[in-house]
View 1 (cartoon, rainbow, N blue to C red):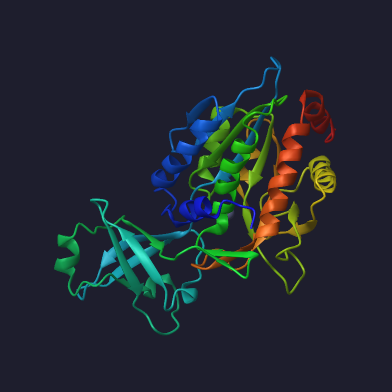
View 2: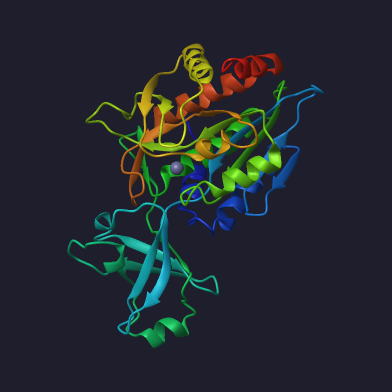
Length: 344
Ligand SMILES: [Zn+2]
């Protein structure tokens, strides 16, 4: 299917809820190290790899994907051994019925479990997880405590040759693409200093995006993320290519950049589609940083994001990758300066 499925599976199956992303970030770091000159962190846990240009006046371009996924935090234990949780990120509690979850205890052991509820609930406050324990004492004895992370527990699979189904494709799409991007550009000389990385805590308010942007001070940023399909309203259709995300809840696209993205998709001979979102991405935070940063989203859509079984189209992934590489090879000092002039 033209992509490294084993690596994607590894990246997807890592547990990485907001605020507990270290295992995924360290996995990604092992790949970044091979293809870049330097690894840089902020103090929240976001990480970028720098690929330096020979151009002494090179502009800085940041390509960023969020490493976190939605999930839960343990908020209490019932006497019968059931676990109460608080949501991390936006989750509809009724999609949880019948699902499996995995908990990481305070001594870093993984416990697999189920959603105890079997009928529709009013809210997450009514959701209970069970990890096979019969009493509160048994739970506590196993170092399960308030604040522990709980993730969806699902295998990543290929179906029908053109689709991938997994938890957290929002945003393992971006994490995986960030690795593949650096690999593809390893021996390519770029005119820009390229910072490729992952942010933490996007799902709870794009917090890592702010701190890593402050660290890097980019001239331009490209955010990789996965957006919800809305096939009924023809707004994000699987297989129809890269999203030209013109408007969302926290950013109005830079018109010059949307036009550029469209032009690059055309040059790369890959499909693209206009997209309007009620949600937001790290771009919302980045573009307001300092005195304003040129920011573009480079997203694809997925069915059922923020559930244990989201689905992306392999061609969409390949289209996003190809057009992004075109873009980065094409970007140079003067072009970025011109984009800045676009808003004057
Ligand atoms: Zn996302």
